Length: 408
Image: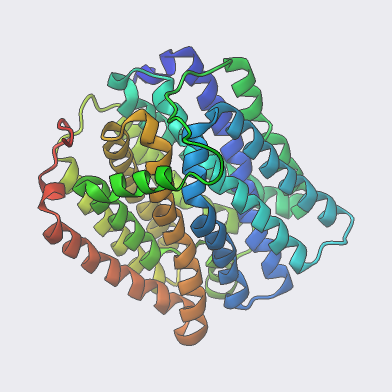
């Protein structure tokens, strides 16, 4: 084991710590919300509605968020968006503490959080290449994934413990405090140099948006990996329905629910840590295809499972597979995109890699209400496996990709 090279760069190290703490807070928030909704109702449609609420700003705002990330100071954008997300957690905590919270409050504040998150992601994600040399970027991306994974482990587990011992209001208040970490880290880091595109005038930058879309859809590797992620998450994800699985299928409550929600990130952290130690990752195309196929396999296992330990294993397998896929896809996108276009490229991808899970929640909630939630998830797993085969055949460039070449 060694200190990852990216963490030897001071500003990236501050950024990573801020990211770790803020993401932990975000994970506490997003898993406390469906649990609290399930206290109001156990209807799968109500839980699936979480995905729909998150999907709408993703579709409507993502492309503009990319322009914001490329035109304005990404550091300042992230400071604002992180503060807004922390504010939504604070309001949820106060409403819950005073026992005045209603279901519509949760949905309304979720809209605000989702909107801020959509604007935050392209700016935050585009900062990394400005903090480390290009030679260290793949390592920085893998180390970032570890931050997401560690936060994704401790956030849900803490949420489960806090719900059991204190209540949802404490989860929200702790989440709000953790969201302050990223703005503080960015203040300590100071200004960050970035290449910006020059505005051609006032109003909406439609030409800039068009340029980002054309770039993304022009390159076979970026397009194929984007569709691969979208189909996998659309077909297999049912995150907001985990309270239903916990209570109705497996018969467990708060802390055990926390472990279920953390299980994907446990698997992801193990896989991410292993990849962070690799000096080079070859046959990346085949590796990403295989990892997404394993996501489908894990969904089949989870859908048919009726035992707690097997369900935990399936979720860990899904997380490990998604981690491998995410690291490779991130490296492909970042290494093949000019800095002045990164925010817009990410914003186009954001519609797919965020829209996929949200649509997956909606799909699983709707189908779950018709044919049963477990069967809906299992069938999605089978469909995911078939989609991997189609993409592998449609884009041979992805199958052949080694990881040491760039697109022209």
